[in-house]
Amino acid sequence: MANKSSSRETVIQLKNVHKTYHIGEVSLEVLKGINLEVKKGEFVVIVGPSGSGKSTLMNQVGILDIPTNGSILLGGQDISKLSESDLAQLRGRKIGFIFQQFNLISTLTALENVILPTIFQNMSVEERTAKSENLLKQVGLGDRMNHRPNELSGGQQQRVAIARALINNPEIVLADEPTGNLDSKSGQQVMDLLAKLHTQEKKTIILITHDIELVRYAQKIVHIKDGEIVKIKHNHHKS
Image (cartoon, rainbow, N blue to C red; front, top):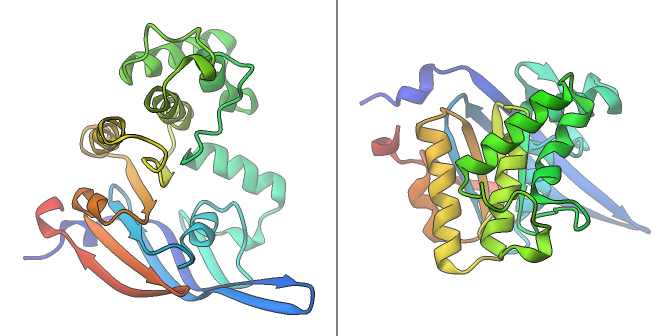
């Protein structure tokens, strides 16, 4: 049976992407010719052991960094042709980030952390506040809006981070080890939220992890090792 995702438009494409870091006189090639296509509405899990190049790949997929060689197309647009300010605008509109370390600002409340990414978008104070409140309610934190990160559990902080990632209604949600600092129950809640975003909100989800257990959520599983994609599998029952 044909994979339903094959007819969908491509939202991000990596073509022969290499990434080399120069440390003094030493050159370290971390990514070695990555070719990857992510379709609109796919749930992609990129899995590999520590040191496989997952984090560097995440930086490329999330256009936080540009490749040494090769090209990255976001919505058909080659990001290497863009200025840093245009890249920042594009990231802000197209991609919502969820990190292992939560990356919440400790002096701000949950509500203020969620509002923060809207500052550079064309949105009124009333609209950004209402959207942020609604998102916090959706992730089950309606009663924690005015709490600061140190007053929240790890699972609650990650749910704040998910709400923050969604505030600008991004096309792609990029999650880097989102359950890495959580206990199993909180991790399950976070994965349930991501699965709901995929099935109900039709979001494109790209999840990067070393936890092989999380591949069950994926439509497409990308295995990376030593800076190369060694295997791509499809869960056709998830398509």
